[in-house]
Image 1 (tube, rainbow, N blue to C red):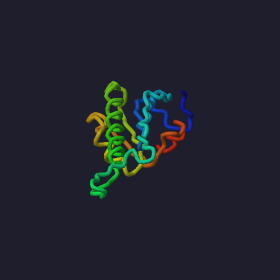
Image 2 (cartoon, rainbow, N blue to C red; image 1 turned 120 degrees about the horizontal axis):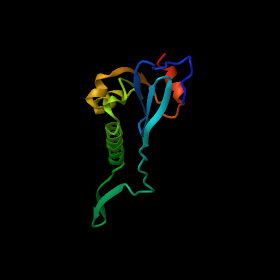
Image 3 (cartoon, rainbow, N blue to C red; image 1 turned 90 degrees about the horizontal axis):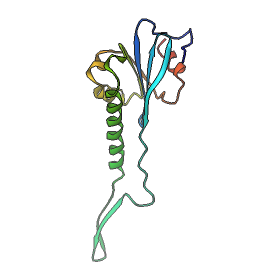
Image 4 (cartoon, rainbow, N blue to C red; image 1 turned 135 degrees about the vertical axis):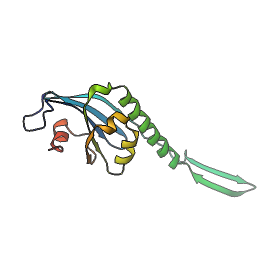
Length: 145
């Protein structure tokens, strides 16, 4: 898609825009006045109905211990998210982008940077905090001006 003239055009370089939330991400490539989505993914949350995630140890009419495993699925989702991110970034040609821009919620920025391949870490030009996954690419590019 052609980039509006009032936005950065990336005419002399190519850029990878990594737009992430906590459960999904969209990767855009911008160059020569055009922007295109090159990859995206979403990690679906694990849902428990009623007390599926609840465990209890009992015997002789007494309850010895009980608890919930609800924290474990959150950690599982988080690991799956970073695995997906790494897989999608590995599939890209390292020469796809001479510059890299990260758009992510503040609490995830550092961890996402740590999961980026070295060549993208070195090409990182700017980080914008916020969840812009569902935004139009032009709205994302406006954040760079």
